[in-house]
Length: 116
Image: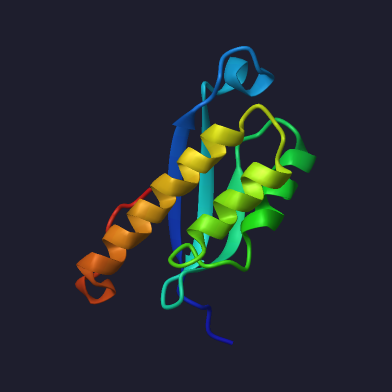
């Protein structure tokens, strides 16, 4: 079986002061593995402190399209993720969306670029 070609895109955003993650990281990092033709997120990870938080955010994102489902993903995070890093996660997601859009506009045929 031939491995599928995917992209890895990252986004970062400043965490609010006073939360544990901010004491360790200062920013939240969001990494997305994306299938480029449809923009489907096949894996997601973020730099939250707790494993349950990281897994929860991944479940909100995996299977959705970074290209067409941004508003729905933001709505899910706003409605279901009640942690202090909510706005930072949304900002990091928007950064990932912008990088994917830039990749698309540039054209995948132009070859890989450093989007991390």
